[in-house]
Image: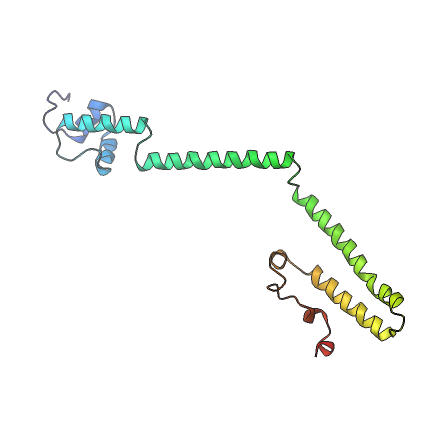
Length: 176
């Protein structure tokens, strides 16, 4: 049925036929308060055209806000990607496997350096007994092992907050 009198109310199906959308789409427009129940066909037509203009201009309400938020998120991700590529180009970022390899080598070298301490102490302090040197070697070994067991959470905290102290390294009978 063709609507000829726009000054009177029409059914959802009739309005849908008039503007080329389904009755379900008209129902959704009513649920979203774009079309007011009981209004005339010309009021619905004006409201529908206003809604279409708003959507086209990017002022389409919640759906438009979600789209704008999604576009902003995408733009941020793209900017982050470019910033990361630039950081890699400048040599500010390295692959995780490379960092892991470097840290393993540095840790191994630090361990070897720590192991030389008892011998250095023996040469510089010849009056120390073998028990004294063994005690130094034990403290160095405990320190090395404690550091080897560290995880990222312990590295991120200050020494005061990490729970690691000289008491952890020294023998209990020596600490007392």
